[in-house]
Structures are given as C-alpha cells and as structure tokens.
Length: 386
Image (tube, rainbow, N blue to C red; front, side, top):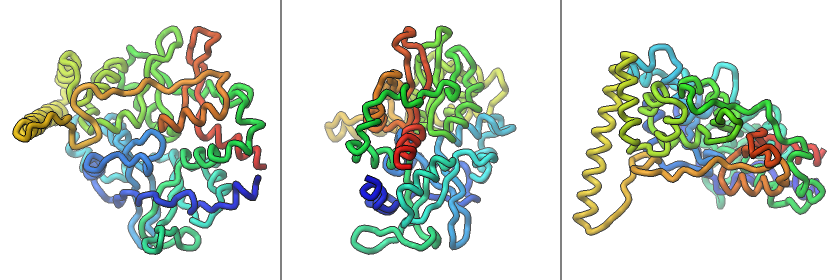
C-alpha cells in the first residue's frame, strides 16, 4: 500500500496545472485587485472554493514565493489598515507586501518537484497552507524541474484539495477507516470555529476573516440559539471588488451576507445604508469610489444590453470580474453531521470545492457542533501510513 501510494512524486500531482499569476512585492495593491478582476477564477490553481488568488514573489532569479493573496486580503487591508477607509486611493497604492501577514500565517512553502507525496503532506501538517511547485516549460507534458526547487520560471500551486483527492482515488486501501464517522476519528473541532452573530457589525469580523484566510476556512454566522445561518468566506468575497470594503465598514453581518449575494445589484435599502454609513463616518473618498463604481457598472450594463438587443441575443450580463448582476445564486454553507463517514465528507467537500465542512449535531436541534477541515482529513491518512 505504501509503495503504491508514495511511489509518486509531487510532480505527478501537478500535471496539467496552470502557471500561477504572480506580482512582485513592490506592486501596488490596486494592481493586485485589477489582476484578480481581469482573469477568470482559476479554481484549479486557487484551491478549494475556487477563490481568485495570485502569488507575491520576491525579485531576483530565485523568485522566492512570499505569499498568496486574493480579494479577501485586499478587503481586510482596506478595512483594517489605519486611514485606508478614509483614503482608499492612497491605500490601494501601497505595495502588496503590506498585505502579507506578519505572523507567518497562511505560509506558502516552495517544494522540490521530486519530493514525495509524504513530504508534501508533512509540509501541510507542519503549517504550510499551500505548496509552490516550480514548473519548466517544454517537453511533452510541461515537466516540473529544477533540483531542490530552485531556479526561476513559473510555478503552480499544490493544494490541500489536490492531496485529499489523491487519497480519495485510493480510498479502497483505507477501507478500515473510510467508513468510520468523523466523530469517532476525532475530526470534529469545536474550539477552532470562527463565528459571529448576524446583528454584529461586519467590521468586527475582519480579524476572524484574516484567520479564516490563513486556515482556508470561513467565518460562521450563528444565531443566538447556536444555529448556522450562513458564512462569510474568502471564496464568496472573491466575487466582489475592492468597493465591498464600504459594505464591510458600514453594514451588519446579516446585511453583508445579502450584499454579497446580490453583489452588483444589492437591494436598495442596503445601498442606502452603505452610503448613509459612509457619510456619517466622514468617509467621503470611499463614498465617491462607491458612487463612481456604480456609475461605471450602470454604463457597462447599458452598453452590454444595447449590444445584445442589436444582435438579437438575451445574454446574461456579467461584470468584468467573477461577480454578476442580479442574484448570484450562492450555495448554502456545506454541512455534515458527526456521524458522517470520512469518505462521505471527502466526497462532499471535493464536490463543493470546499476545504472545510461545518458539522451540525442532529441530536441537538442541528446546532453548530464544530468544523472538519482538509488538514484534519490529511492527518488521518498520515497516521495510517505511519
């Protein structure tokens, strides 16, 4: 079993993966936001959840990977950095290095393409959020090359999702644990749940959202009775743009969820609440940014509608980003029960491109009991191999 599973190298799990979009540490935060809006979400490159992400690399031939950033990082920066909400243009001109966590959370680790799958798992279990694997162009299948993971050139992400999928493909070899419940395996973690109440200010959730980014989870929205009513995740925020910082700064958690669901065309009462909140806080520059974005969005909508009518088509209007006009059809949070089997949880998470599942206790009125993550799942397989 060990020979079959661990005979593959990291490079075998990266065949066909696209090169990661990258920016230098000196690039402006606004350039990062523009880069993320320009291209389609690279679910395969971004990891579970499909959130748009880009790499931040240091200058020089080694191109050391300093971190991985997405729209959620930009929003957290705009909401938390001193003076950023009052002067968004100045904040967006700051280098992306200012967005990187100072405590090393969400570590990106560069690995040798010839490293074993076991070494990749150990890297994740020791704190790496994602692995950067160097690519070398040319050859029949874009081989991965470079001894020691050194050298310049492009690289791809190897995510926790990739590793979980790898083990799911060989799940028959783990039949003695595959059918066991996640509760019996000790995978339900209640202490690690990040949660807020619907009536709380969305701005209070920013520190929790930063932790969720680093752990590839989300912030649970839980009512006063302990029931899960929604979530705020980096993947959902990836459908917005930097003007969503105005919503985070002025709305309640419940209204922020509605804003994200209807991004591009939020309910009128939410739009009024955002503008009123910005005025009351004296955030005139942010208000101007929001109003300018609304005007440009309306112009884009009108232009696209005219083109569609001229050609006799009724195409859906979409923003230049991954969000869309009207209802965004967000999925409900992905949940399971403590009695769910390990293999069922793996299949459910992979099907929804989620790196975590919320655990609801059916014996306690379906209250939120905890969370199970890909890291927990990988730890089970690592213990079995050991």
